Amino acid sequence: MSKKVLVTRIIPNIAEDLLKQAGLAVTVWPGDKSMTKEELVQHAQKVNALLSLSSNKLDRPFFETCKHLDIVSQFAVGFDNIDVGAATDFKIPVCNTPDVLSAATADVAFGLLIAVSRKMFYNHKLILQGEWKQFEPLKNLGFELTGKTLGIFGLGRIGSIMAQRCKGAYGMNVIYHNRSRNAYAEKETGAQYVDFDTLLRESDILSVHSALTPQTKGLFDKHVFSKMKKTSVFINTARGGIHNETDLIEALQNQTIWGAGLDVTNPEPMLANNPLLDMPNVAVLPHIGSATLEARTGMARLAAENIISFYQNGKPITIVNPDVLS
Ligand code: DGY
Image (cartoon, rainbow, N blue to C red; front, top):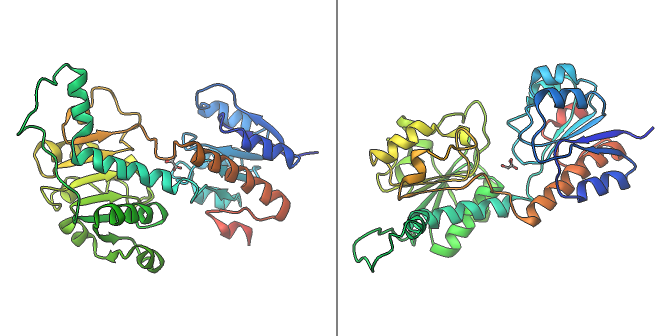
């Protein structure tokens, strides 16, 4: 009997097509809403493999109930919604979709940087409010990016592309901080490794590209913002949980830092009355980093191929807990 796969939300058709071509029986959860926890547990019990989204919370109780699963393949590069330790305890491979969305996500970070430095979202709002009256020689001035220092927190695939974009367009000097040095990315981007405090002290733009982990959760707080330049811009396109949003609002209101560009917020979704949305030096997007046709198609393809490769060769392509295979 063919193995059964549950896809927890409608994603690009390529996933279902590939899974079916490989002889797997596929159920795609219909509709435009995430499955509830109860729906997820109930339906996951009837299948062998799960193609999940980052909106599905796959915690230890989930894996205790669904320890029969052969594999969880996530349609996202981030997997902080999954208790990988619990999956590993039950010998369940967990896969993600790196690379295919890196350029798209870096573009959003780069776009936010330009939008913030020239107060674009705010100026757009002024037009909508009928406030474009005349040429203003002294109002709403931004700053230029040429020659500035870009600090990358988490120089991986997405951070490296952001570094290349900023170097190529504006000749920026790039520094970075990671848990451990990334020699390959240093060679690719010319980025220079610095300790965390130096990153905070020297960055004109600090762009976050790391995973959300117990070590990075809430890391960018009051204390950290106070060590950054008063003229600096904080960009986060990784996970909202990495910054403390109350502290960020305060840091912007007190002019501890100059501006912020967010594609991820804490919590998500952001409420329409969030003060960040009214600040001239802030640009916020609703977590659209990977929202291009190319990236989402690539994610759907890779998420499906991980399951197929697991069933055909015993080895998925991009696995985050490879220990389970040994
Ligand atoms: C990712 O792939 O991690 C994106 O942020 C969507 O969750």
